[in-house]
Length: 121
Image 1 (cartoon, rainbow, N blue to C red):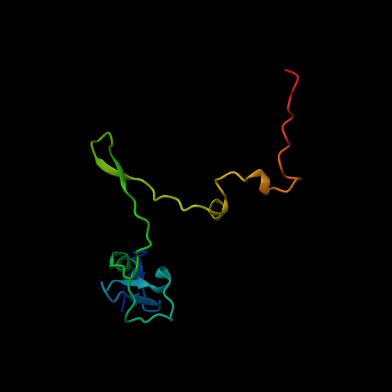
Image 2 (cartoon, one colour):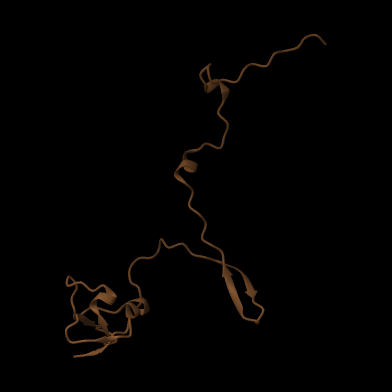
């Protein structure tokens, strides 16, 4: 069974290892798509079919981007530019206090020096 590899577009000879996509039935060199024998040949899908298939699972933790503005290039092609998702606070920022530390709570070595009172006026 000879054919053309959809990845490298060269002929697949009868002596070469090959794999056929279970969905689109295109042929590929096993080396071109990184096929290993731990996968089932009857259920293997090519990278294009995998990319086009509907993803399943819980994606509720995926950040959502919001549209910020519409831009046009010199040819009049219009596109929507998306804002990146907000960055998660770093772990050091989460432990940092925003309120000043009362000086009474500091040990004497760390407390700020006392202000001198000038009574000469």
